[in-house]
Image (tube, rainbow, N blue to C red; front, side, top):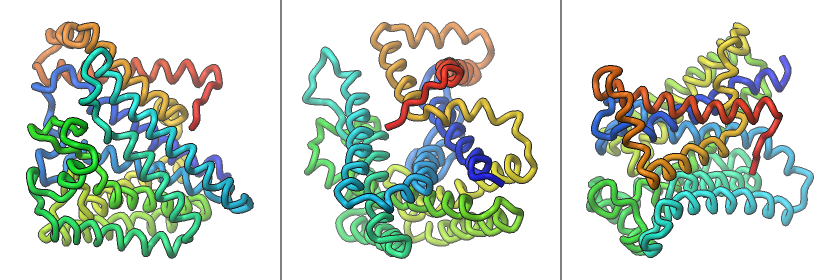
Length: 355
C-alpha cells in the first residue's frame, strides 16, 4: 500500500468538507433551509456543526505529512515557514471580511472569521507539535480543553450575552468589528474559542500520522473507529456539565466533532483503501486539490452576486422546482457545482494553488 494511495481518503475527506461548506454557506434563501443544513441555535449538534471542525481536522491530517519535512531545518526556517502560512491564511480571511464593506464604512469590518481561525489554529498546532512533540501536544490538548472550560466557568456563563469569549472579543476588537448575526456583537470565531479549536487540528494530525505510518488494514481502521466512538461517548458524558456548543467551541463539542470526523475518515478509508472503491472519489478530489482557492472563490462569488443584486433573482428562478426549501437547496447545490467546474478546469491544467 503506497503512501499516495493511503492519502487518497484524506484528500476525499478534505474535498467532501469543502463541498459541504459551500452548500451550507450559500442557500437560495436563509428563510428556507432544511434543519440539518443549519447550525444549532445555541447548544446542540447538527450535521452543519460538523463541517468546520472537520475542516480543521483535515488541516491536521495534512500536518502529518508536512511536519516531518521540518525536522532537518533550522529553527528560524521552521518559524518562517509556519509564520508565512499562518499570516497568509489570516490575511486572506481579512480580505474576505473586507470585500463586503468596500465602498462602505471600513470601521465596521469584521476582524475574526473562518480563515482567521484556520490560520491561527494551524500556526499554534504546528508550533506545538514541532517544538513540544507528540506527548507535548497531548498535554497541550488536555490543558486547552480544560483551560477553556475553566475560563468559561470563572469569567462568564454559557449564554450568548454572558460568555467569557464575547467579553474578551469586545475588549480586544470592539463591538464594531464583531459578527452581529446573533442579534448582538458576538463572534463564533473569536479568540477564546481558537484555543480548543486547535485541538481539532491536533486530533487530525494524530489520525493522519497513524494512517500514514500504518497500513490501512481492518485492524488499523478498527482501532481508529474505536477511538472515534470513545471520543464521541466521552463528549456526550461531558455534555451535561459542559454543553456541546459550536459557537462557544466547548470541549465537549471538540471531542464530538473530532470523534465523528474520525468515524467518517474510517468509512472513507475502508471504501477507498481496503475495498478499492474509487470510481466516485474524483468529484471530491477536485475540491481537495485546490481547497483554499475554491473556498475563496465561493465566498468572493457570493459577495459579487450580492453587490450586483443577482443573488436573489437567481435563487428565485429555481422556485418552480418545488417547495421553497427544495428550491433553496437546489441553488446551493448548483452553486457548489459551479465552484467544482472551476476546480475541474484547474485540475485538468494541473494548476494547484497552495499557501
